[in-house]
Length: 267
Image (cartoon, rainbow, N blue to C red):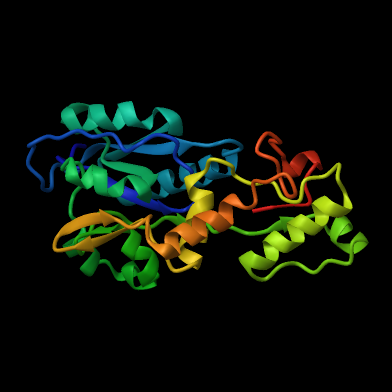
């Protein structure tokens, strides 16, 4: 079963993708194709993903039972190797999937490559679309058009050692400023422990700080995107994040890991 364009299941914030979106282009026509045959599905292979595979296997059975003449072939791709596979799919429709999972951070690049179908009209006639959270659906749009169906979302949370907090009579922080103060207090009281395990050179760890202090990565002006990381707000957010990577909280060379017990908290 072949369609000229890929459909995408967008994921929000749940994956930290290490390489830039692959850039490719093709001029293959967009539009519906055959409705019988083999439906090829690409999903991400993840650590400890057996529960996910079990759910997908059940969904595969249900889909095939409800669609005569259709068989579903599911392939699990390593996240780190997705760039080569998607590049190949965009340049050769015979090697492309019909449905694919990928992170929403790659969306704009893939749409610019003409790799995904516009699902706006289909979504308008899909009853279950009413259950989609509007703000999450926005992450699957480019220029107001829908190119994916949000599958799941991920959020950042603070994990902390309750024994350490109880011993030092500390309350869980409610703001980013309080988080810094608490992490510094842990490091001061327990020099053999790091106040917090940080992401270090991690874009996804720094972004919440940029946004929290009123900044952003870029803004669209007159149809073009302009970087805004040099605004006072964005610079303050970056300064606050960088402040966690210091000798009195978590030294740059520490490599602290929460699950190793050598840090009082982690985000």
